[in-house]
Image (tube, rainbow, N blue to C red):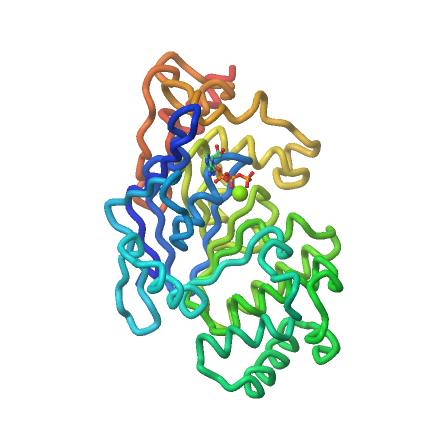
Length: 333
Ligand SMILES: Nc1ncnc2c1ncn2[C@@H]1O[C@H](COP(=O)(O)OP(=O)(O)OP(=O)(O)O)[C@@H](O)[C@H]1O
Ligand SMILES: [Mg+2]
């Protein structure tokens, strides 16, 4: 059973310069307990997709449409996310679907203590009395590995390191065991040494609470550690989809291959840092045909003129490219 099932998601922003098509017809599903990642370079539409999942985009400037957008809760009830009112979403968020952001500081209230902010989750969502809520908050802080929780509970966000703040956010997001946890670049603002600890904590929490995970990242190293299945996103479209083993071992789309080559040690044949030529196109000036055509070493006239569909191989792999890897290999000679 799928926790989230989205068909043909489109997000358009109305700006002074014109319309920005940030997400262009994305199909996405996440199974029960499944760990799914969306990977791609900056500006590809990863965050906009994750915000749409939580119904956090405001209209205007964002216009969100989908053929279907179904979230199935703990009790098996199906919710059409796009038809929910803000009050209905408030109940769903935290209890059923929660999100961790890149920068924990923007999420925490600077004038409330850490304890007060955690207590609120239990008071608001579980109707607990303040004293009982504090007991739960302290227990939660222990679960996410915060030493001396009593002392930390009385502190304000600015008194905590980035890693500790992210642990607090993970505690808040997972305290009610939501069905789905969405993590948008949760470690990019942190020290490299702390990153692995935080990723491990997210993994542990998901396994323990049987939560599904949607991991948003530009880092295939993170995907390898954190996901069973991956969507590769480029310029608002999914260009490749498959299990993480298959994608890393046998990437089919030139963009996926290029992304793998940017991570040293990911591909045994490439031991140096390789950059993908040129930049992601401006969202209002995407190429006419395949969006990757201006950066692709194998681009043909067909690629330049006509957008390739997402070919479904029928084995869980989908690829938005006219050519097979064998054909691309031959073309390079
Ligand atoms: N409020 C907005 N108004 C106009 N355009 C927007 C808005 N929010 C996002 N966009 C555009 O939508 C596109 C996708 O943005 P998004 O934030 O999803 O990228 P991303 O893949 O998360 O990138 P990053 O890795 O940098 O976080 C970008 O071109 C961005 O400029
Ligand atoms: Mg983002």
